[in-house]
Length: 92
Image (cartoon, rainbow, N blue to C red; front, side, top):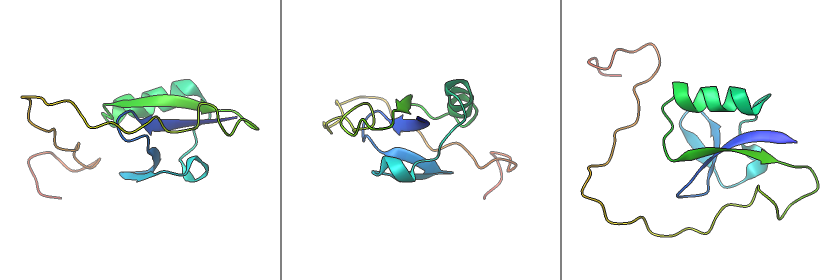
């Protein structure tokens, strides 16, 4: 069993930092669902979910959802969160 983070819109799995992968085997693994949830909150990873990948279930929860175009919205796109340790008002 592996605990990973998956993006809700794209179905990609977090592979570390700001990198995403379509392969659940290359996804960053967490020791528990609580740790993964804490990571999501700390990194402000909106539109993501904690997913538990079970061994021997290739067609289960680890499969990405079908990709559908995002709904039209009047809200501007959000910038990614600043890198840790760098104040938001200073360039990276």
